[in-house]
Image (cartoon, rainbow, N blue to C red; front, top):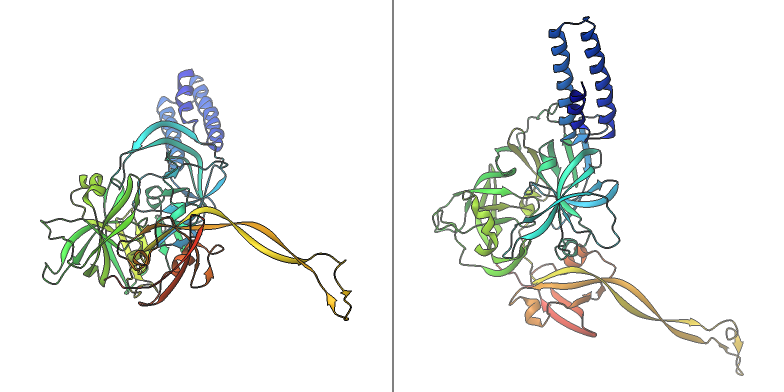
Length: 489
């Protein structure tokens, strides 16, 4: 009998609720054994009882291994922030509030190294190495488990995740808001997920009760999976004189802000168009990613077609690790996905698309050539004036006038520092003399230190030939530059 109880004790890792449930089941099991010893129950019935108890235990374990809606309803809604075509959702890990990216291209949750002052009690298991996009080496990480992981009313216990140890890997500076990690497959697999980019709301539905509505304006496309990541078969026409519709298999990557990435493939006639330019494409786990940017003639997703869509061709050195899946030809990212209301249905391996208000937005490149990041705070000195007290206020002079004496004094304030992180070669900003490391003070007369990063970036955009007046701090010297926005392609 002691050995039987030791078997049940193996399930004692899930939660306090489970412990209570197990204890109750132990007592029931004990009563069954006593009854059998007193010959009041047959061996066959005893086996049936044991089977039912084990089945119950299995159900409890399965409930703990996935996300559940904790209020008992069949759906839950979560508000998100759409920043640079990326989905930022609020999460709670072991009672600590954080912000994560919702990324369909990630098969395991990733957490970035916490800053000094952040506090999170989390069980760390073992050290591992991760390899991602970028031309650098693998990075060190720790495999860990959280007791609880919540996304509003969604809860999962005992979630395995990877903590990246390198504090230099930080998405917060480029997005201008705190980003503590990334989650994808773990939440997508447990629900039917409807993402409405226009309203910035996600709905998570119970797959067992969800019913699809008839939708003539929608298109349903099949998904295939590799390493728990979703792929879609679509077609692309790169240039006039090349195969008009090249079939391609693309990763659906809600964690990528670009429209399209394509990998060069001579056999499939996927090549870089003649009109192109070098650019910084982003940063992966294994370093910076550079490549070529251009446009494709057409991009087709089911019944939907995009013309002159933006496309990036990353350097082959930056995508070495993804070449293990030879069928993959690239990715479709947030700048395409946000043009739809998207329903992900991992269980039935399908995706449903319906136009959103962003569908017809033009595909525009950065016409200034400037990539900004939020690089901490800087000190600003302000000179103010005030009267020097009532002793000098209202004192009459000999000619009957009132004298008010003012004193000047200095105040020092901490304000946001927006720094030029990347600047495109031969861009209007570079040709005007701006450099990486310059800190933006104002744009067209508007001081930026109290703005969000997305708003500051917006000030650098506009119609072609728009005049830009930019004031920067280079070291301790304030400099002024002028240039006009220029369409790249």
